[in-house]
Length: 129
Image (cartoon, rainbow, N blue to C red; front, side, top):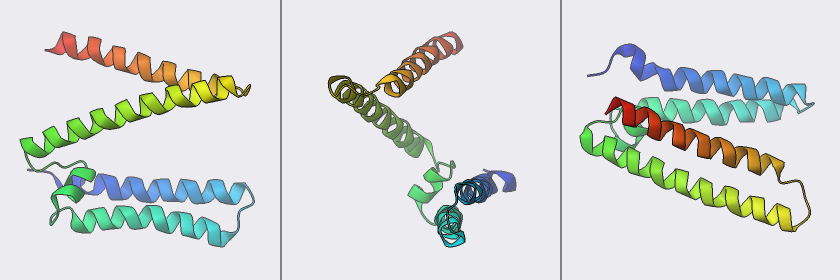
């Protein structure tokens, strides 16, 4: 069972993120229409999730409210797959920029962050289990 606050976390964060993106765009000399479109996309996504989270298992999961243990397991496997894809993409981007004589430092930092967070997670969850 979820609380009323839990159901509104994603929509509120979606609106706040949409506002931040719109303000950042306006600060970079974007047109108000571009800022409005960016806000509408982000806020629209949050609204759609909120409307559908009680009717759709996927929307519920994307809202951070998995229905049961099966959906929690699906979420963990999907996160694992996404992490593996990002790791491969970071290594590929690092190598491409290295061989292309470009600056690969951002990819190196992101790869280091990924590795350290993974190792930290292993240590953290090992201690807790």
